[in-house]
Length: 127
Image 1: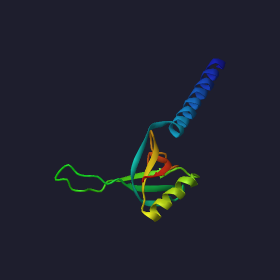
Image 2 (image 1 turned 120 degrees about the vertical axis):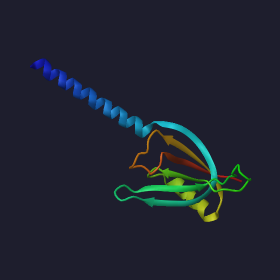
Image 3 (image 1 turned 90 degrees about the vertical axis):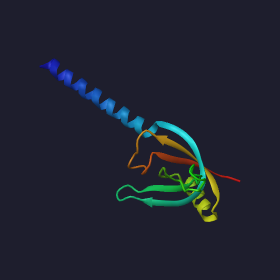
Image 4 (image 1 turned 45 degrees about the vertical axis):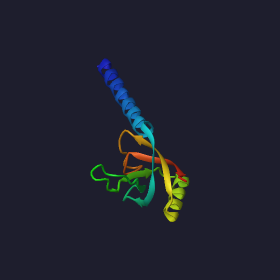
């Protein structure tokens, strides 16, 4: 009976450690990093229980059929507390400036941090 108790205790500890490790990986690990350029058209704060900061970037572009200009909207999130990025985005919206957004893509969408897998961490104005 004592060995069965030890087995279940060890199994629970291993399951707990795996769950913690997986959670930490999902929150802190990045799948990719990149840069997108365009004009910021929206910045909002939304959510019922967890308020998240979201935005949209119009990257513009051309379609291959006929060379028509098409609109390409990219959705992104901003981590809570990153006021510098939020202020930069607001300035870009106010002045209609073209910007480069530096982002990190997560493996999965983390509902309490944002609506997307893309988190902008730096904004740079394009000349």
